[in-house]
Image (tube, rainbow, N blue to C red):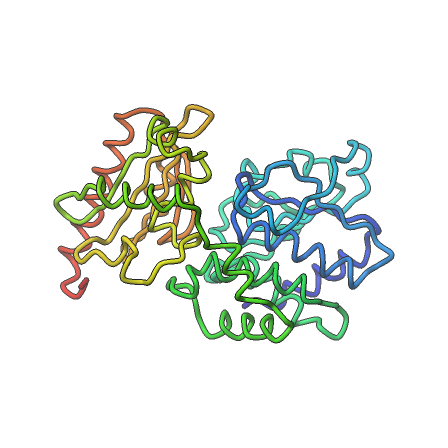
Length: 338
């Protein structure tokens, strides 16, 4: 981890009386955990500063992490330091008023393709942005403060964005930072219940997923969940997204039940009708990098966990075909793919 980037960030934080935090649209556990966790750490460490998180874009299934702050007038941003977490591209920042801040810091673990900030700390090989915030705290723990609430927020992001420590980005540092957060008093039993327990409708929907899953010749599993299917099961768009089995962030099943345990499958796609008349795509894979595929379809993300957006059945078919070709080529070049 590039610790040389940490001191300039702390120096900037010390130089401002007002700090405003930002994150990406449709925030996941890592995004919410990083923004709220950093806010909590800074409020504890610098009680004389104003640390705001004025967000309206949130996720219902993560409401237990607590509310955000009210909206701020434009003039409040002009003398503030902005910190954007877990957001690779400026167009994904949910609050467009980030551009009004006097200076901007980017803290992220996605591919660094958009240098939108005055100061950036990017760790592409980090399993989560929350891991980076935990590292930031640890590096300056003689100056910064953390409590059980902050630890739980950061642990939420680490455990969800690492697939409960299953994704290839997980390394020894990931586990060491997670252990330190546990030592700070995280109640894992309560947290996992809040994250992973599902209601009966969601479980019935999971059965539908298994029954209607389709497989390509070369090993891509895919499924489309249209608006009618969501209505049939009484699920919101977020509920449908959460119930997709391979979105392991939100599942509480044994490893053998994940779609990524299907022998021969190296890629999994879910096409979910969204309220804005687009079709959101969840992409997951093993061994085969799919983030460039997602980028060709209005998305992006990590090598083995990405998201995209398509707008028609033709685009759905094209994405499936491209994914199938990626898997086919990978298997042809690697005899040890399992």
